[in-house]
Length: 452
Ligand SMILES: O=P(O)(O)O[C@H]1[C@H](O)[C@@H](OP(=O)(O)O)[C@H](OP(=O)(O)O)[C@@H](OP(=O)(O)O)[C@H]1O
Ligand SMILES: Nc1ncnc2c1ncn2[C@@H]1O[C@H](COP(=O)(O)OP(=O)(O)O)[C@@H](O)[C@H]1O
Image (cartoon, rainbow, N blue to C red):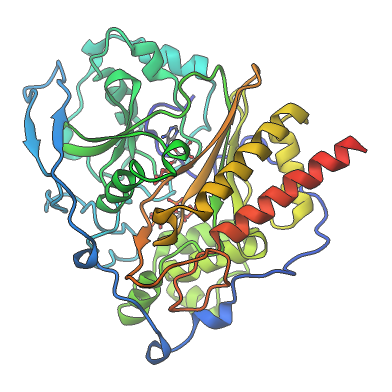
């Protein structure tokens, strides 16, 4: 059973590994070249994308949900754009690598709990409903230790978080949520069944802008900042609302999963990380270089590049991160799912071979592509590490939305991106549309194969 906000050990939580189809054609369209990644700094055409270059964000009213068992009660404030407001806690702007915390970056989101604890995989919706029905009096946690803590106590937090939500009416609705992948402890339930995600200024700016963009129907609705237990959260729609025991798939889009800024920082101030080394050797003990082996640590960019080349990110421009089926089984063992045949097999399994569901997804993705091609937001943003969340249920209802804008950055005008041009350092291209094209082609192929 997995509780709300529980730590997700992304590299170890798989219950039902997908059997891997034989890999036939790999890499014919490879968008990622490791050779490009080791260019010396002097050759970089890097754009300055720090927060100061980002337009100002209008003030937001911040609501603070009352927490019955706590002494702090409802407070209201304006503009919560200051970062790292809890200096004694792990910064919401910093990495949390075991091998040393990289320098805080204004636009980095809180990355509290790296995948280093083994917990059970996700459970069914019904189990979640039970969790939420526990009495509020069970709330006992200390908010000060919540933020950024990375301990076994995290195991207890989610239940406490859930119970702290004083929602007599929409309790059931709020409970119908499950996190497939991503940072543990990042989410809570909010008022009216909304989802609260730990505040990240970059994500807030994106969601705000997206509310006024043609992409609005393809992203969760955004409702400003909510404060709970002294932590700010971005408040958004729970995309699972209205589904019954949904099947959920998270696909990370694009041919690159780290920012150009990350590369620059890695060169200027390398921060090898032990946690990433450990994650690497779990998957492939032979992956580290001799130097990395000595250090027992790898740079984050190196880890991310390794993950990209191991999976379909470089070859297809997207990768499956995790799938939760209606029966509650959750699989995040897709790190080596690289070739088309493997991806198709995983997709077939995800839709349970349903042609109507496949058709719905194809239509939705085609519509999304058309909107993306004409979106002012999309044209002007480097979209990195963002996912498409696929959701369907046994009633035949299906939807796809863009989520996770923690690494989506505006590019300096007059630069615009087409999201298909292969990435060269400095061009800021992310391969998002190239990946979507490949996804759409794959679904089309699957459907035509079934029609034969
Ligand atoms: O999936 P695994 O192999 O566990 O690696 C994770 C993902 O790449 C995360 O990206 P996402 O959140 O998009 O899934 C990333 O967070 P960022 O996106 O913030 O880079 C984590 O970096 P750290 O949080 O620094 O550990 C990294 O450890
Ligand atoms: N708006 C949403 N509605 C429903 N589920 C969501 C929503 N946003 C995120 N999730 C769930 O949380 C997971 C992680 O989301 P993400 O935004 O990528 O978090 P992180 O930034 O921690 O990686 C997703 O795979 C999905 O299961």
